Image 1 (cartoon, rainbow, N blue to C red):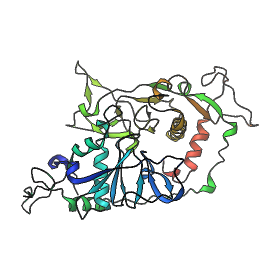
Image 2 (cartoon, rainbow, N blue to C red):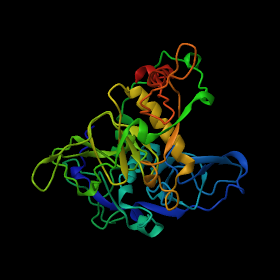
Image 3 (cartoon, one colour):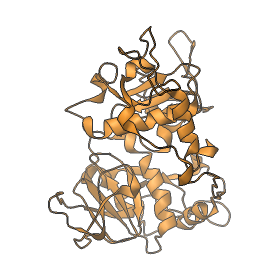
Length: 371
């Protein structure tokens, strides 16, 4: 099925859904149990915990965070408790189902760049948010108009059936792997050594572009934002030219991007050339550092960022090029002693990251043979 958005129509979110607020429940108040607790997070379908408290929202709804990881939308199949940083969308369409929910949740995530800590996606803002969706058409291809104007003042009706069929039409080939947990090397971090990020790669602060100001006439360059979705890629854009008409060269594939805001600390290996938004740093490594080793580094960055850095307090962007670092495996000789680099390129002690070990470890993981 062709995903041609040029003919989609605008709908106001509050006309499609009844939007209800979540309710605060502190960590101390949460009791262990089997009910989903949805937080303002960008992973695990929004499930931050499992609690004993009874659900306050029905399943077959969409959770949409307006604080924390702003704009993270997830279809929720089962009843749940949503935190007060999350609003819940109850569809006004009686035939609403998982496929339609997944479709609209994906559309909603594309709106997140419009909102931030300065312009929160509050309940009022959500109710007046405009999204584009496919609209129902007559047999001759003309737009179907509903005289009751239930979903829009123009009489447009979302093509619920098309959205349902589109999600069902998406084919995938299940991944297989020859690796198993028994093949993984021991991850003994006790013998790792500390490295500053600035000493193992070059760090620049990205292009600082605005995705909403990009042109899309011939989009083929990835645009990386501060999201944790889709490897950080917000979409594809045209090549950018400067005031003199010269092309602004994209960053090359093989770099790592790190979100300094939004989904703070989200680090991804970029496999295609790209531009970046504001608050995205770009890491470039020596040619002998493999992509597998870079994937190892992205995990280290995300683990280090998760609990130590946060907005309006300990900002990552003030540390990433100075004192941000973490422990890594180091190169050792045949008897296990550290190999010391007399130039002290990577650390004051002369330790050298063991790039080969990192590469091997990633390739040993289940599905690592697909990297």
